[in-house]
Length: 368
View (cartoon, rainbow, N blue to C red):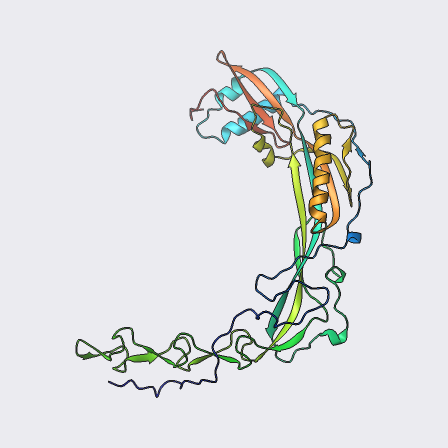
């Protein structure tokens, strides 16, 4: 049985096959100051800032830190913190917490150092949109500004933000590379024929000597992808035949944070400190901060110098440093030793929230 094609579009050899989604090499014009573009989808060159954009540290400059006082807690505060902790554990009895006898409260000096370096990074990529008669800001209106000369509005400091800006005077119109300016592309599902072989009867028109009810005996069915036309509207230019190309600058502001707590308490897991707050002790903010000097914990001074040097070398190679901030927090930590029913136990109270950590508790009974 011969298939009937009168209900579908005829094959048109003038309608091209789909081209690549990305422009081929050499398709786009070169723009001064924006080298490194190939036009590919992953093409997004990074532009390190000119040396004058980054501040330079002064040699042998340091930051003095004031005297420190270690906070303490009372037995009532320690007991209340333990009761709050026990009540959150349904298998723990509150009786030991109420009746324990404190033997010693040992406060520790725990300093948390944090360095924040707020940076700005600029990358760019070619972008396009269907051209439908909109204004074209091309090089005839002026020289495109260099990546770091494009004006931006600075966000609130130390907040991560991304802004995309169309670079002035980089726009131009180009024939759509996917459809070669036709506005339509050949349907890849039916190879431009508008019909596809019926999958039920495998193109025979019948099955088991019965007329195929799916294709009504034709052996072919209208292509669902192109609705039988044999072509589809170009997905890039939406049928407009032309694309407006331009360079899109991506400006990324990022707060790069690094912290450090000296490991001075072997029985207390350091990761617990990450989930609690400390009492602000020292805040130093400037375009560039300088290593600490005169702090009672020399390890904090050493890590301050190390981190500041590393941040400067790491971030100035790719980004612009806008601001830095170094802080010291005093994170309360008290090791409470107590006795209950003739046995000795202990627990830790830590953070300004007075959280509790204990590796052993007198009972795991839910009866209170």
